[in-house]
Image: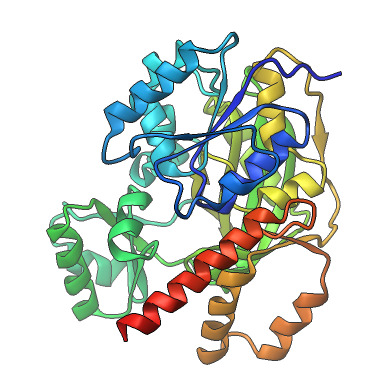
Length: 397
């Protein structure tokens, strides 16, 4: 029988990653505490698998107070809680206050600054170069004669990509800029400079969205991969450069052969997701980024027998986790319907996908992002949030 003396503390309850972690652990009898800065919009708070909810200071606007809040909570517990970040800003916060938080919480990573370096695309690509990984060619905005370098060595289209995705997304509501000509390049470089956001101008690897693959793995405290599977994106939002809204489990041995030794070599611990893009011309796989927190399609992994949050919980509380891999294609999918509706419209309008092809996927075996008939309140709450947004939009008009 699994020991569940330690509480699990989930940071962030207004997005389906947090909801999935709550369900992944709560269903196994773990006491799950959800932490968010407000009740409004935090639909994961409604889950029947949540044991406790806490309203904390804002993790970015009041970072120091948020850290102190977490420590004060942990001090009241009989056993160290296990800490689960749901988004990059929480990962960066844990890294910033690493020494203080590890005194009171169980955390996978053991080296301060490691997660921050993984999230920073510039440092990640330098690390990848050291291990002979293919990465898109990039130029820093500090490079002399940048425009000419871009035009002679990268060409158009290319992309402008941030080192810190969270601040960029917060400001521009997208993950990157696709650049088609010199005018756009200068315009967007000026925009990011005004917002003081560090970016790189990067080679665009050719290929449709289904050329994006992931290696999803759990590495134990000896930095050895114990569990893994692979997946293939089908649709993203925003299209071409966004998060997965429809993805299927597909066995891709090539990304295992690249990703597994790399993660072990750099001493990674805990859950990691490497995103690769397969070049449509050469067939080579390029490392795009590493997600150092639970993936947005976590529920698909759980349904396939890979409960990554539970693995972390068990290992960090001294319990055996064994080993497991999925070396076949199940075609089981994950679907975030709300954003996929927006994505599908954009795919059809841009003539990248016919509507008929998209509709066919609705018959595939898949799991949703939010709705669960065994835990309906979060889904009902989410619908209420959407209706409120529609109402406010109509009123503003």
